[in-house]
Image (cartoon, rainbow, N blue to C red; front, side):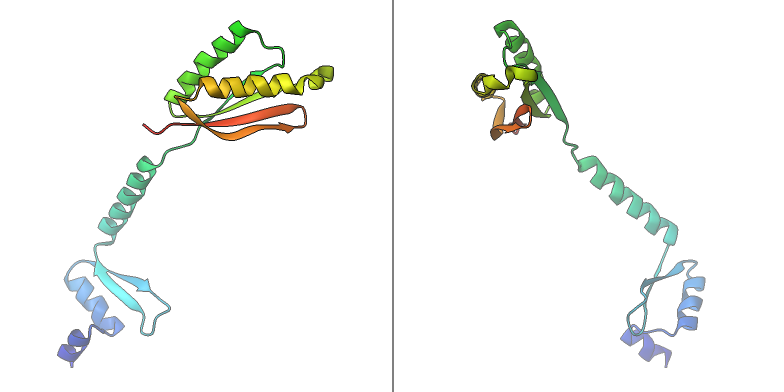
Amino acid sequence: MVGEDIAQGVYPTHKALKMAGEMELDLVEISPNAKPPVCKIIDYKKFLYEQKKKQKELKAKQTKVVLKEIRFGPNTDEHDFQFKLKHAVKFLQEGAKLKAFVFFKGRTIIYKDRGEILLLKFAQELEEYGILEKMPELQGKKMTIIINPKKK
């Protein structure tokens, strides 16, 4: 009778528990909803250790997307532009995503065209470091572009 059960891979619960006890291992229920329930004889602490190890490896392989922002005014001077451009290059080389925006205060909203030109010039200067994801878009008082870093 026991030989038939072993050949089929089906053990009554008490036999499985006895076998696990003899091997000094644990009986772990894999699929409780199946008929009959599926169990495995394994070292449970080793199993948990392996699971933690896999989770840690997956977490190490993940990359977090960092979003850096750079703010301009519609009348940003050339020196300020170059200064912010250097920072943008550094951010993109580090692998961060970049969000550049022109903020229009009060009545400066009438200079929308200047803001768009400024952002397009900015994107053009960063062409070798990143790829423009989104063209300039006006959202309320902000005109925004997003630049993704180029893959290394």
